[in-house]
Amino acid sequence: MKNILKIGVISLGVLTAATSCSNDFVEREFQQSVIQSDLKTVQEIQSFVRGAYVSMRSATYYGRDYLAFGEIRSDEMFSNGGSGYFNSVRQYNMTSSDAYARDTYNQIYTMVGKTNIVINTDLAKLTGTAADVAKAEYYQGQAYALRAQGFFDLLRLYGQKYTGGPLGVVTPTKYDPKALQARSTIAQTEVQIEADFNKALAVMTAKVANDTPSNKTELSINALKVLMSRFYLYKGDYAKVRTLTNELYGKYSVVARDLYQPSFDFTLRGAAPNSIFELEVGTDSSLSTSSYNQILSYNGYKNLVVYESTLALYATNDIRRNLVSKVSGVNYLSYSTRGKYLNRTGADNIKMIRYEEVLLNGAEAELNGGDPAKALKYYKEILANRLGPITVGTTVTSVQEQLDAITSVNLNMIKVERRKELLGEGFRQWDQLRWGDTSFKPASININQLAFPIPRSETDISGTPVVSNPGYDN
Picture 1 (cartoon, one colour):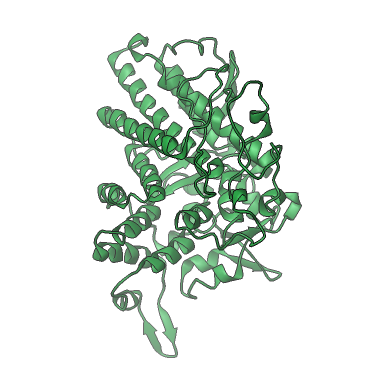
Picture 2: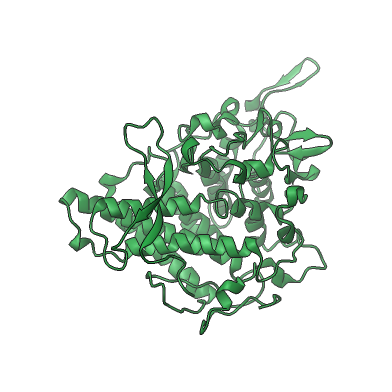
């Protein structure tokens, strides 16, 4: 492949001044003449890493499309075609020129390109103090983690693991705008992802003095471990998921029932006790009508809606049921004062990692060769903060009494709980696929269509070794 970035001018995310009332990442043109060689200062290192975060929050990546892709082709939500969005995705009729396939592909590789510039910088040549170098090393660790996540996201969307083929994705480890590189196999791609995650953990742990988990808008060591647990769930390496969950357990808390909806609000940006990592957006860099909440909202494009069968999973005393609003017989996850995504300006931080996911990952892993009692404990911690008392006539059953009645948990219960807790957050299709469940796929659709097409803009490059996915027109 050819790298997406251009020599000379690169769009980076930089922080507003420390005295600003906002800590938004703001996209600016950054005239950077040294990107062909090493970066020279910790500020340049930091700017490129922040630029990677800016790429991630784009509407064509985690700002909208990647989350929507995980829901449109699933059994919990669907796109109704509202305002013309996601038609080719929902109808499985994408072509190699499809904008959704092309734009997300380019955006992720742009992010990867920025991380590669940081990763391949010789920090021994850095200008600054020993403290500056240590800080730069920590940011270099973040760059490894972000590159791993980018490759993982590409693999799930464009790789052939769920279509029966051998190919993964292109995995460039250096920034070279003239390079032509073939797709790695699935196994090779997974090896690269794991190596990057492990390198990130080693580097960031070695520079732990620079770790600030209270700053939820940059990757901390804790956040990195959750991203690693996602990857190991995908691989079925449950022992590693159990280890990572044990290391994270108790460092955060399940958000209380009465704070469940407010924990998604713009006003709590990073302050919720269950928040581990968020992509910072804010008012200065609002995604506006390009945001995910606009796709979800009845007051917006009302495109992505909740199946009735999904709503039926919630008990009437489950606070999460209240986040789904029925309007004219249709279930929306965002409407007026209810829902996970309410700020119509698109200024909400993008919730990347919540503690509840940690417990769900851990519970699933414990039920696959671990301790079922520990899985039950994780399960009950979530329910204790989601259920309310049940009143039938004059009889009131407290939450604790309801929990006491649950004496065991099985894998199907955890799967349902993931569906209820993570609704709309872009997990469902990937969960179903890693469990081998393709029931959401229409019978008339060839399994090859589960993978997005490799964009024609990639396969048409002269001399490229990149091959397309079968079933498409390139």
